[in-house]
Length: 164
Image (tube, rainbow, N blue to C red; front, side):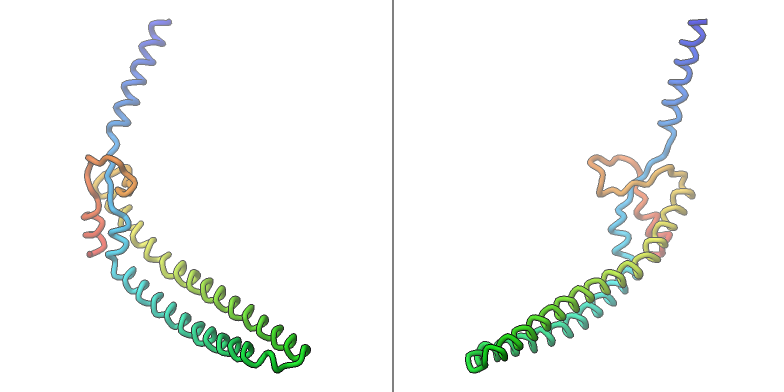
């Protein structure tokens, strides 16, 4: 009985090793494929334009605020204590509003980026899945995370699937 259990354990070891070595693993440069997609290029252009528009608006407001601060610094000595306090409170409120607008613009940009990138990532992941199934790959690993790579490279196959 003891010999049978040892024999069973040995057979299971060989089966396990055989199963592990039978898995096909490929790598691909995920970032390179993603950046080569026309959808990514269009998204980047659109986000850059949006960012520039928002940045220009914020710069105009910041310049107007700076002019108002400079004017206060020049004329502040002529004002009464109550007028100075009121002007300082007004300037502080404008500065807070400007900071809030900057934060809102950053949040809007992040939301737009997340919304725009989601379908692109889905398209790429679907192509990776199709390539993996068509070529019998059990795993496709991002090649940028590998220290040593000797297996097949799925990058050209995924690019072909995407028509790149």
